[in-house]
Amino acid sequence: MAGTLKAEWHKWWATVVINWRRLLAYKLNFLLLVIGPVLVFFFIRYQVWAGIYRLEGVDTLQGYTFEQMLAYQVWVMIVGFLALGFNGMNLAEEIRLGRISSYLLYPFGFWPFQMASFLAFQGLQLLVATVTLLAVWAMGWVQLQPLALLQGFSLAACVGLFWFQANFVIGILAFWLEETWVLRVMLVTLSQFFSGALIPLELFPKALAQALHWLPFPYLTYMPVKVFMGTYTGSLWQAFAVLLLWTLLVFGLARVVWRQGIHNYTGAGI
Amino acid sequence: MIHATALSKNFRVYHKAPGFWGSVRSFWQRQYSDKPAVKAFDLEIGKGERVGLLGPNGAGKTTLMKMFTGIIVPSSGQLSVLGHQPHARSRDFRLRIALVMGQKSQLWWDIPAMDSFVLLQRYYEIEESTFRRRLNALVSLLDVAPLLQVHVRKLSLGERMKMELIACLLHQPELLFLDEPTIGLDLVAQRKIREFILEWQREYGTTVLLTSHYMADVDALCERIVLVLNGQKRFDGGIRSFESLLGRQKYVSVSFEQPVDTQSAVWQPHDPQWQADGLQVELRIDEAVLRETAMAIFRDFPVQSFSMEKLPIERVMHQLLQETEVL
Figure 1 (cartoon, chains in turn purple, green):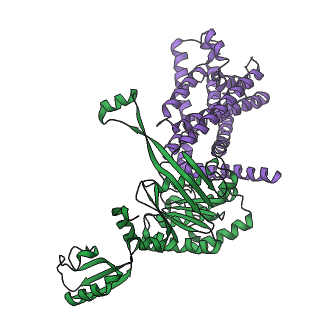
Figure 2: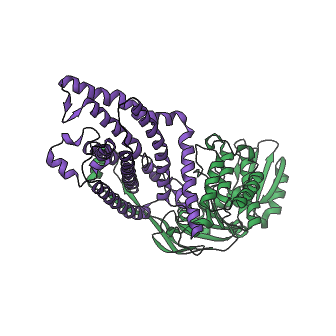
Figure 3: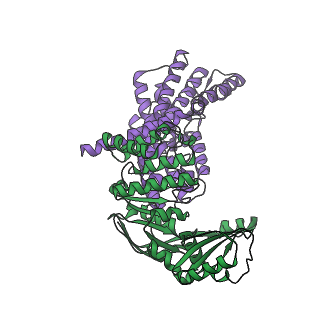
């Protein structure tokens, strides 16, 4: 039993390591992946909110001062680093062109391979997030509180797990669909809006904000951001529970879809 | 090793009328049909056998390979490979097989092959000292030591194929599936790969199932041939009996000092294949009339060279595809 566990651990770790090697093989590509969100932050989010406050000629918007809004947007970026993986992006193509055939032959499952690849990417993202966070903290844009950081990182890890599983399900729909990117764009757009990544949920109509509490969306950005900021007043347990429930639901869905999909797989291209 | 009974696989094919309106109509009304790729296929392969699956494109060879390796699920019939149902893809089953795909790389493109080998060491649970020993043996047999740290995408096709073979043999599979292992390689590289596989197979007694369009692969590597036409098995037997399917014939190549009459009655019964300039011909001659035909050729034509060998398997295949009633 211990031997099997050790062998499994070696497989997971070797997959993580090989993914690091792959990610770092193209240094410029990796650099762009890392600094892309930072550039977006400075050139778009910062400018947009600075413009809004200037044009409106106000000091606060729904209780947010410009500095608080800036801090909110910084944390959105950090949560993005921690939770949004890029797994599943190429999954559909790999299925359609029959590239997953190789993975079906290895004595290591396809899901564990994808999961380990995701963890490898998130490991690097954690490093990037930490460096970015230290830089903005040094600039005085955010405040760091140990307990809030611990809770925020834990919640963000759960969000990452949910996103991974959701992307996985969408990716393996390629067993039936030619392209799955439309579905991914729809999900990302919906979640961007309803998760508070674009505007804080306080600016939403009250009824809608209430209803959203039972959907995964607010937990994907808004909640972790508020937790990181130390201003979250709701139940942290509820946040973890709702998120975990949705993750389990999507996990179950992935199992069903995979089982059916692999039955339909034709292994095109070999 | 492999037991298949009445094995069948149907693929669902989607039909769409051509043009824009065809696309619009197919949006509402999709028409499908079931295309049988493999039909009621029976096959028994024993331990240590070297079997060639032959057939034209679309005959069903690769579909069979995919079912045997568990990549796709059969539509009906029974299949047991190494005592397992392949599509259940149990860990034990996957530890004991390997598939080399000439047209598809299994190595990670962006990193050196050595990194992939280390990953496979973990996947196949190979102990460190065993891994080093096997890797060294394979690397020296294939002469690729200087290439281990080179990114796979920078290797030539021949070099990459050698690396693919190493990747597939590190765990010493009992059953090795080779799908067009020499496709696209130059003649020297093809020969090296063939020699290597043969040497490996002899040393470890690995069971080999090969598909290839290069008859030289089949000739060199296989002792038994299974011919597949339209998803059905049409021949299953030793390579020598496959060669004699068209009767006891010899393959004769004659070249002449000057162009000769290609319409002469001497050639006609022997399926002549002329070079454009009329300076060389290839013939298929029954052994019963070989002596008198050869004498007639020497007597009537300015023969420069005359060579004779048994009918190449390539010729047998070509002929069989035209005369399937022989089967």
